[in-house]
Length: 324
Image 1 (spheres, one colour):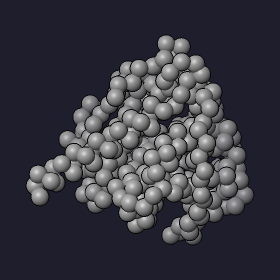
Image 2: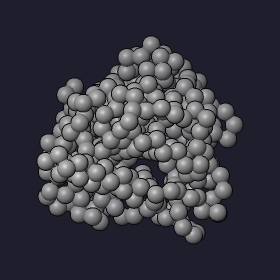
Image 3: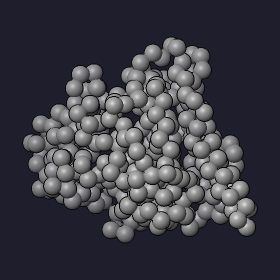
Image 4: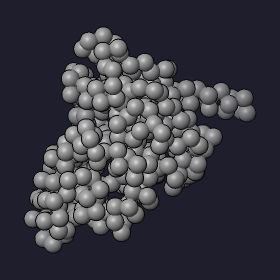
């Protein structure tokens, strides 16, 4: 399934911003569960309940995303229409309510992914698929690479617009027009952090937080120290998914547009394990991939992911029959 951008969306920025803000999101009826986390915190998970025995798809959202993000609604609407089941777990602090613990979430959060995926897999009675978008895609890839064969209960995985090289992505987001994205993220991240300081006085430096104008400075003050990294450079290096693409054993699609403003195409990794498909279309923006005439539609991306998942399952079923 090749992606071709509509002629009326001529740039990576438009292909990023327009689908996220201007295309109507499909309606999805979610059922929410609150899970108590092992550290005394909680995680809110939004479910789509399908038919027993049908596939189950878990989707990890991006930085400051949720089950209401355009890509989450688009994928879960497709999942529901097929009679499949799905879940969108919220990273901590992203479900509309502050979380209890000092921690938030981050691009290398493989431990959190592991706990959630294993718990969800225990509920599925058919094929089990995992997808992640942007930060959620990077965290999913980190988990797949670190877990290797321990992750083989996942039948197929997809990562969309993951910032595979966090340092290069950080550089890209810290200058020029791209600062619009940085400001959007900091607009919601900073108030959450100020509220967190009221819960946990002295957790980090309030003046340094106020002074942070880009994600490098923000991650230095908050993300890195809160989650066990020395500083931003250490976090961006150790959490980048590019280091583990060779270690992944689950059949995995890595889908990144070369004109994604969050990670320019020249920084996309060119090597990965045999089970990993690197799909780098020329256009699509950051989690954009709109199609059709005005006002545009969001269905290409869910169809691309499900096409990959079903294709993997069909291939493996055929191989199993041959060797049966």
